[in-house]
Image (cartoon, rainbow, N blue to C red):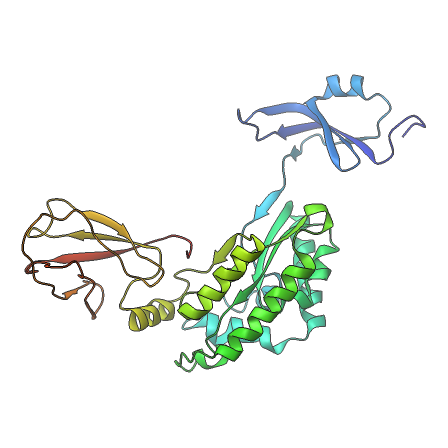
Length: 327
Ligand SMILES: [Zn+2]
């Protein structure tokens, strides 16, 4: 670098530059000029060498230069389980993976999370979305790596360590401990490091969050102006539990109803936060409310609450697992 060059400036030359601009422009033998923490120019190598003759250069011939990858969902701490889960049958999530999070100390989580961040950086990832448990205790270790982060504490009020025995026991005090940790995380880390570190609101999954818990999480999301994230349809046990508790449909599931008696063509609806849905615009007529059966469930549904509903001979409802975010 010459004496006149900007400090912390670098000109990467000779690369295949994937700009990912609106036209998806790719520049062969391209260059990128960086000054401080900003990209100040992108173009042909010869042009940028002329514009920035004094800038320190890095020859990237044979390499690609592109925006960083975004890992939109990971649990950095769980890299400790790598190689032990892939072939596991049964309930790996609540039988093994989630309970592990209770068995570690903050220092262990912090060390693993930092290693996860370093692996991410090494593979070209610049943004990591990390929902997990006890995050406030190790997040600083991730922040210090320089990654762009979206952090969240995955709230739940079902007693985690009982689920592997097939027991879903909802405990408000257990949920409130999560809510406290969520507030701690958000107050300490949200929108810090000049915006590089953000928080989200996370519900772990529909089976481990009661409607009370989901409402608490929604309230907190509104209060702090946070985006939301949730695991959905992550385990067979989740679908079974939600069906048993709420009559069959997950919140935000798309439901398609067909019936030669009731409707002239398939109708589509999306379930509400309680898994209920309403198919509107049915043919007018004097009907009698009646349950019906979903083909892929042993349960009878009694979602037909439209007043003066019909006889339901040949009525058929299909649940599709096309899921939206929880409301
Ligand atoms: Zn996950």
